[in-house]
Length: 46
Image 1 (spheres, rainbow, N blue to C red):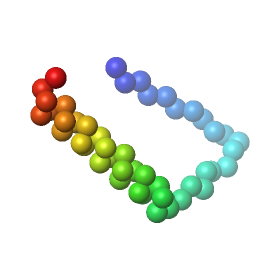
Image 2 (cartoon, rainbow, N blue to C red):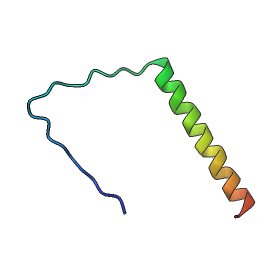
Image 3 (cartoon, one colour):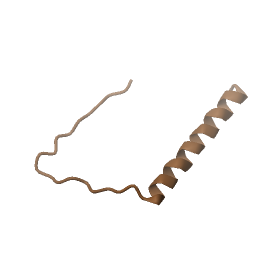
């Protein structure tokens, strides 16, 4: 069961994160690993 949570930040500033090449590459590698793992589980039928 998924649960959502919101936190109010009334006095703080914003986080100035950037989408760098390293961030994009890391996300692509993680997604590829998830796809391969899911495909393997589907094919092996365990």
